[in-house]
Length: 461
Image 1 (cartoon, one colour):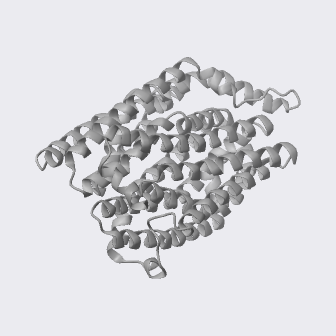
Image 2: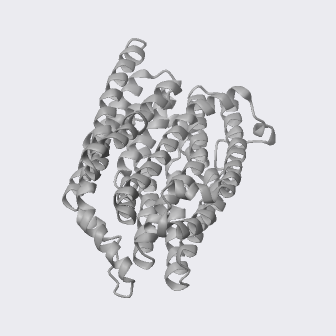
């Protein structure tokens, strides 16, 4: 029965299959995004804007370490999808075993380093002034749970590679519900402040891990590994590293982006603009969930059919995924253009019991968030092509073009733009860097994707 679920990736109609894969992925990403979003709303209303800014400082650090798990998961899942498509079950098992070993070694090592250099890391990511102390509280506690999150993210991508999107969706829903419940208990009822926000987040990581561990240990998976599968194999590790490096490099660039943005905006407008960017950052995670869901759903379909040499199905999966994601991105774009001020107000409290400084900061954020949000999301309708195009190369195991296209938006375009434009346009230059980078990256991706389709999927089919 389990095997049929993976074979369906090469048999069902692409449109129906993409919906089956993308809807659970989208729901899972939505729920996880809501987790971050509502968590920020709770923190903003129950603790204050400084707390939102503090979490924004910590996120790139913890996300980067957690991204090790995701990158190992996605890199290995590409191998697993193609191995299952080619009926190479033993290779799939060895790949999964190697993913477990690599995740343990990498995440634990970086957590140790992260704790040793905590006082140097937080200021470099914008945790200055009044932001430092709450950021340190949140950082240390959340970092304890990052290895657990790394295993959860790795396992989730493997579940999806097996063709079990609903199970992967449930794994993403569990930490969201548990985090929100614990947020309410720890922050609102027990009044634990930043300590409560941090322990709620770490507890949610554990809940997700326990569910995924149960899935694999209860033999519901096709990938029932034995101890010998955990031994690292050079060729598998090399392929996981090359493909997973795409995801890790993307998250590294995201972390660098947060570092630059927090420092540049702090220099321009201190805590106020850092808090504005924190809200926009949450929306960048939340608003595009359907596009990311289609991208995640697309990966195993493209990988499986490429491994099975069903190239017409691969072409159709590309076109269908771009179409679905573009429509959803356009709907998101309209909502963000119409209601930016209303969205920002969700994160801010005007409770008169707050200090005068906190109320002044909240008023600044409410007054200055709408225009930046519109500018940041200005190119949203076209980003689907860039995301699907880069994901395609990752799905078929071509690590170098996948890496270059993944890095094109933030690494090759956004970072240079955000370093240059503020010198000419001030704060406006910071926000304009987002849509300009989106447009340039989409043009580049469209060119290389079209070239690859003509070379590999038309001439060889």
